[in-house]
Length: 143
Image 1 (cartoon, one colour):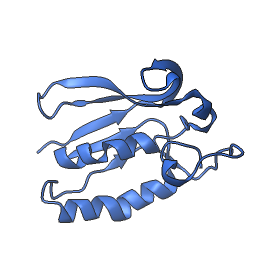
Image 2 (cartoon, one colour; image 1 turned 180 degrees about the vertical axis):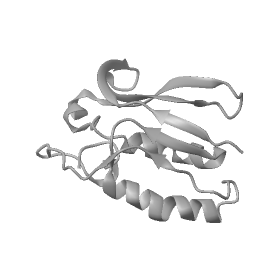
Image 3 (spheres, helix red, strand yellow; image 1 turned 90 degrees about the vertical axis):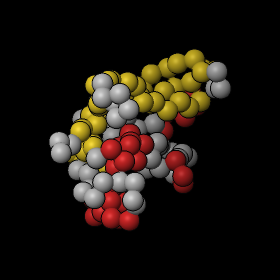
Image 4 (spheres, one colour; image 1 turned 60 degrees about the vertical axis):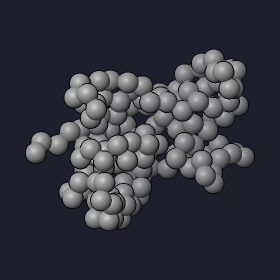
């Protein structure tokens, strides 16, 4: 069985108008994959919108939030995940050593073989923004 690949482009930030936030900021990346429902290869944007006041906390330098957002899709369909921007090394290791093997082993909806995460990692620290972030937003914001 040939495995599919979910490809995540380097994330970027842009200003948008949002029905919820009004003037907003969007953290986005293009995601390319074969749609498991139609068999058609597609590229679509995956994005997260925030109030503009949170712009300085967004982290387009890492693929972490997009990899995490697509884990279930990859696992359910037997797809590997390839990413252009580096992923945080510690998260990459935790996914490979703990999460992916456990999900593949104990979830009947996922194939019996674990997915692969394909891309560079980094342990380089990002500049902290004073007074910001953390808690449950760690995937979206700078640590």
